[in-house]
Amino acid sequence: MIVFDGSGSMSEMGFNDLAEPRIFDARRALHRAVPPIAKLRRLGLSIYGPGENANRCANITRHFAPMADAAGPLLATVDALEPAGPTPLTAAVAQAAETLDYRNRPATIVLVTDGKETCSGATCQLAAHLAHDGADLTVHVIGFRVRPEHFDWNAGLDMGTDTAAACLAEATGGKYIAAESIDDLVSAMSVTLGCPVYGALE
Image (cartoon, rainbow, N blue to C red; front, side, top):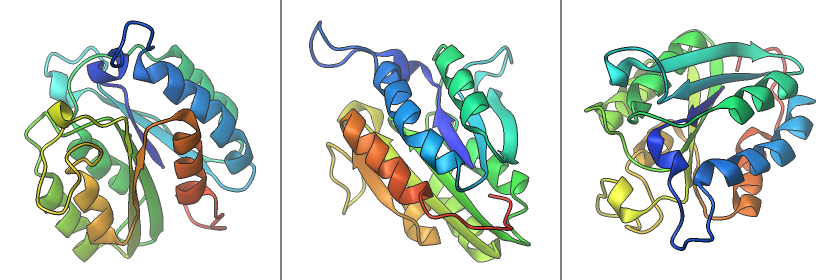
């Protein structure tokens, strides 16, 4: 299950006037990474950020649960995405875990985020609960062009490239991967989702 950052920061420009918003390169990376992965395993998609809910931190949309041949729907959804809103990544990951029935079956979540929780979610507390309650849940976190102003840092994290959401990966035996380029993001998606798990709702 992919939990994708659709918050307003994904529409921000880079360090110079020629740089494009992060979402452009994220789309390019997904177009390269997802089709071969989708041939091997079922994929689901949840996006947080944009939405019509008056409580902007409740704007988390589960577009579809894991299914076969998901490349087309997944890419179309991300291509149509207009980034907006805050970053309720903790609630989004919790929702994804419930979708996957994580207490009773093996499950994998890949969180793609460009920064920190901004909706007061207790990310590392959730990580501990998921690790304790899950049958075999792994959460991988991909920090895409994370910048210091977009993250809460703790000892052991690189202030320039790591997000505090890394504790989700650490607690569940997943990987935290910092991705700066399109190639980095393609590689990170392949590393975290490239090994098929047959028979599991992921």
